[in-house]
Length: 142
Image 1 (cartoon, rainbow, N blue to C red):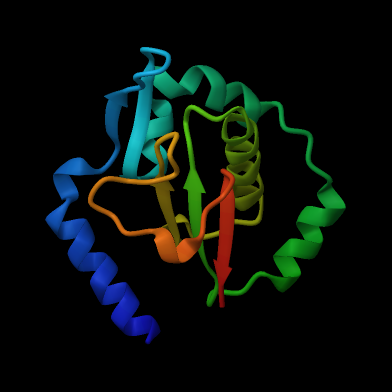
Image 2: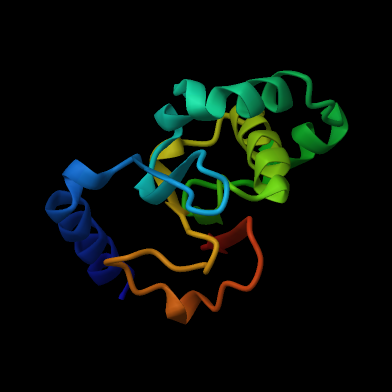
């Protein structure tokens, strides 16, 4: 089942490759908003780096926790991250999460990031099975 999911994800990525890191204008604020499948490189864009970089850089993590995580995190863990670049919780927690993943040397190829609109939906993606109520949502698969 996991292999089928990965194959389907690959097909979706190939079909919608031109839409990765898609930035639209948030109708509520008039500011740029990320929507759909994305990768970490988008946070270097000035639309998002102003909040991502400081939160990432100055996150004060507990080294003992990092050391413990290094011992228990295995190569068979995959993560799905659903976020909203319009959401203050995502602006705070996603950079912190990325910092932790970097500190434990987690393979970023095993992270799927989906950015939703204010309605917690993504046009062209069916994510209703994820039952997203709040963002960010971190889903771990083993």
